[in-house]
Length: 349
Ligand SMILES: [Fe+2]
Image 1: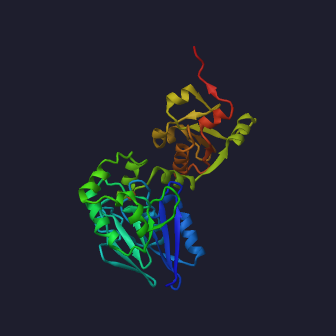
Image 2: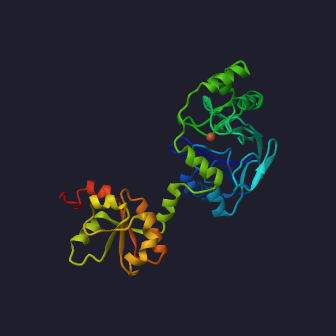
Image 3: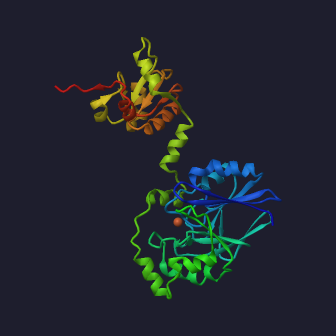
C-alpha cells in the first residue's frame, strides 16, 4: 500500500494529518486546524494529491476546526461521528464503518469518553487516536459530553485490545514527541495503569485541570460552524489595503495630506488623545453615520483603532459601502503613540 502520511502540528500542539493514496492521488485531512489551511492545501498539491474528505475525530474544545471552511472551498464533505451535533457535517459515520480513500481503507472505532462523538481512525499499521489516547496521557473527561466511565471502556475494552504493534498518532502532542506505539503506552502511560474502572474514574475525576484557552469560542464555532474572531479579521484583511504609520505621519505633515483620518474607537477614548486632525465615528455607529459624516465617497480615508484589528473590520465595511479608497492604518493608536508619533491630547482646563 503506497500511503502518503504527513503529521502537521500547530504551535499549540494540535496535530492534524494529511493521508493520501499515492496511486489514485486522493487524500483526506484529519482534524484540520484553522491556522494551517493553506499548509494542507499546499502540501496536498506538492504531493500530487487531491483532498476528498475532511474528518474531525471529535468536537474540539481547544482547537478551531477548519473542516467547514476547507469543505466550502473545495466542495468536499466533512465526516464526523454520528453523535456530533455540528450542523455542517455531511457524512455521519459510526463504529466499525470504513471510509475508502483511493486504495486506503480507514476504519472507525467509536471511542466516547473525552467527548461523546470521539472516534479513532484505524489504518493497517497505525491508529489516529484523536484525544482518546495521547502520548503519556489521555484526553480529559471534564468538558461537555465527557465521561470517565465511557473513556475507561474505550481504552481498556477498546484501544488496548488492538495489536500492540500499532503506531499511535494522537490529536495533541505538547512535547513534540510525534508518535508512539500502543505497546509503549500500555506499558508506560500513567492513565493506563489503573487496575479497575473505579480507580480509573477516580484518577480522571481528580485531575483538576485548567479550562482550555478559547473554550467557549472553540465550542461555539465548532458546534455551529460560525466564524472565530480571527477569521472575521483575516477575511477583512483580504478586502482592504493598509497605510504605514510612517506614511500617515508624512502625509499629516505635508501641505496637502489628501487623507481623512478616521478614529473608530469610543468617543471618550478619542477625546483623551487621538491622531492629529482625526475625526471620530465609533465603530458601533459607523454604518448609521456615514451618510451624515462622510458625504464624499471618493475621499481617501485612513481608519484606525486602538490595536489595529477593529479598524480592519471598519475599513472593510466602508469599502463595502462604496468608500472604495478606504485603507486601514498598519498598526493602532497604541503602536502609534509608542512609536513616538504626535498625538492631539485633551488639554486639562
Ligand atoms: Fe479534544
